[in-house]
Each structure stands twice: as structure tokens, then as C-alpha cells.
Amino acid sequence: MNAFLNELSDGKVMVDKVFKAAVAANKAKEKYGDKVVDATLGTLFDEEGNFVAFDSVWKTYETIDKIQKAKYASSIQGNPDFNQAIYKWLFGSKGLEIPCEIIATPGGAGAISSTMKNVLNPGETVIKPSQGWGPYKTMAKECAITLTDYNMFKEASFDIENFKLTLTNVMNTQGKVLVIINDPCHNPTGYTLTGDEWDQIITFVNTLSEKGPIIILNDIAYADYTTSGNEWKKHFRKYNRLEKNVMMVIAFSCSKTLTAYGARVGAQVVLSKDEKQLEDFKNAAIYSARSIWSTVNNSAMKLFSTIMNDDDLRETYINEKQQYVDLLKERASIFVSEAKDVGLDIFPHVEGFFVTVKVEDDARKEKLNLRLQENNIFIVEVDGGLRVAICSVSKRKLKGLAKRIKNIM
Image (cartoon, rainbow, N blue to C red):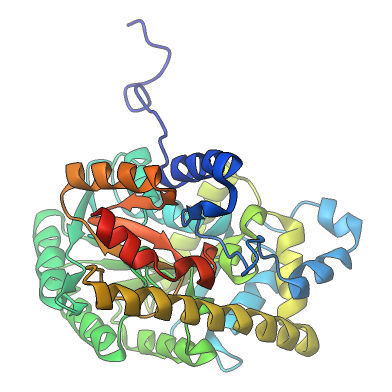
């Protein structure tokens, strides 16, 4: 044996398509300036091309005592006031009927990877959407588990029948199901499931759970940018109907909610009527936290709880955020309507940070992306297409972009 690395780590090379495309876009901007359309990063930019960091958030951060910023978190599970603030932010003052545990994580990514690590054995399979966030694959490989997809769409709606078939097949094979649902404001398509589609999902998993445990990993990274605002969060009440053999793990991210991408704070919000299994999951997640990242950013936890527990600060934040929810809606309207006019095929879009152009053939997609870059249009290759980050492109640059892409195709 001549390798320093173990068999699982030997040969690992991280090629992140988002950051690779962003680097190429930045080089082009140095040469061509404003001619470049940079639709790579899933972060908010204003109409002047400036990175958005909410004043309501970062002015509050400046008021936090330096000792609080420097200290460790008070608990590996997360500061109690942070966990309580997340619970209230998601579920309201009345909360849910179903028991809940919350574990602080470094962003939504920490919540997702920890769940994969603790739910499945090496060699078992996690189910993800056919169009999905790229790091789901990276995390699965890191945990030595395999992936399979459910088909996201049948025409303009969620493909519930394929969802059922995929989960049933995995249940029959391994006796347990872990499935990722990225909703609302799905990355990369911008689709949001309807209430009826969620009702069908819950009815189905309750029935399938008679064969074995089911864990739904609900990635809600973009939930605070749904056009229905806090009204959407009434959806969580549906989880009260989950049977005892179904667990819901909500991956919450402060990255998008607070425009605090680099602060790396989020949470696993775990719901289950099986209180023994819920306690076991919490203990395993805390153990993993201590062994991998120890504790998360204390100052960012303090920031979130400070804003959410102060009526005036919270209202100021909500009003500022709403400006960008409205802006995203305007940007999407431009691109989606123009795509329809010129016959540019896109996946169903409802709201959020992204729109994705359909390009199913991988070789064609790669060649097309290179041609777009030659024309100073920088977008990101994803499963089944090319993702346009409307969150980072001004309305001025979005006008005519669908036609330009269509012409290059």
C-alpha cells in the first residue's frame, strides 16, 4: 500500500460548477466590463450590481457586544434563544402539535450532510430530485452512500407518480427511505409545490411508512423569498398529520434569510411523533456536530435571535427583505415571459432565485455553455439544463437575455 489517503478519499477532486463559472465571469468582467451577464452565484445583487447585505441585519450586528462575537456558543446543540427564535420564526407563536428538536448547524449544508450521515448506512441510497443542488451529490459521496432521482416534473406540474414509484422501489430494496425535497423556491428551477401536491406527498409517505421508516429532508434554504411571505409557513401545519414512522428534517439556512452567507449558520429542525427516535436523532446529530464542526458561529446565532425577538427590528428586516422578494418577482417576469415569447424551453418556474433552461443532453449542454461564455453570458450547468441566477442580474440585463440564449442555441 503506497497511498497516504484511504480508499474513500483517494481521488477526490472538488470541481464546483458554480464557483468555476463565477471565476470565469469575473475574468470576463475585467476585460469586457458591463457587457458581461454574470448569472452564476445564488446570492442577491441589487440593480446597480452591488452585493446585497441587508442594512436591517448588519447594523444590528454592529450593536452586538464584541465578547458575544468572540465567545463560543453556549451549547453544541445551539444557543437556546437561537433555537427558540427559529422555532417561532418558522411555526409562529402557537407552534406545531408534533414534537420538535432543533440542532444548530453551519448553514443549511451542515443540516443536510449531518442528516445523510446519521440516517443511512454506507452503501445505502438517498433519493434526490432530478433537478437539484449539486452538493447533494458531493455530500452523498462523502458519506459513502449512493444516489437515485425522482423525476421532478411531468409537463408543468410535480411528477407525483414517479415520486411514489421511486420511493416505493427504494423502500422495497433497503427497508428505509431518505428523500430530499427542496421547497419552496426550488434550486435550480424556482418551482414551489402546491398545497395539493404536498397533501399527496404526505398521504403517500404515511401509507408507505407501514413498510419502514421514512425521513423527508425538506431543504427550505429559499423559504423566506416566497412571494406569499409568512403565509407560506402555514404549510408546516400539514406536518402534524405525519404518521409515527415518518420523520421530517427541515434544513434551515440563515445564509439566504439574513444575507449572511459567510456566517455559516443554520439548523436541523427535526419533527417526529416517535419521541424516542426523535431523542436518538438529536443525540446523534449533536455527537456529529462535536466531531466535525464543534459549535457554530455564536455571533450569527445572537444576531438572528436579536432580530427575531425584537418587534421593531423584525419588522424593519421583513420590510427590507420584501423589497428584494418583489424585485425577484419582477426579474423572473421579464425572463420567463420573454422565454415564452421566443420559444426558449425552461422548467416550470414559480418564484425564487433561479430559472433553468432545459438542455437534457450533457454534451450539448457543455458546448452550449461554452458558446454562451464566448458571448459574455455566464450561467451554470445543472442536471438537465443551464441555471440562470436571476437573483444576481439586473432587470436591464435580463431584458433580451432569453432571446440571446435562444439565438445561440
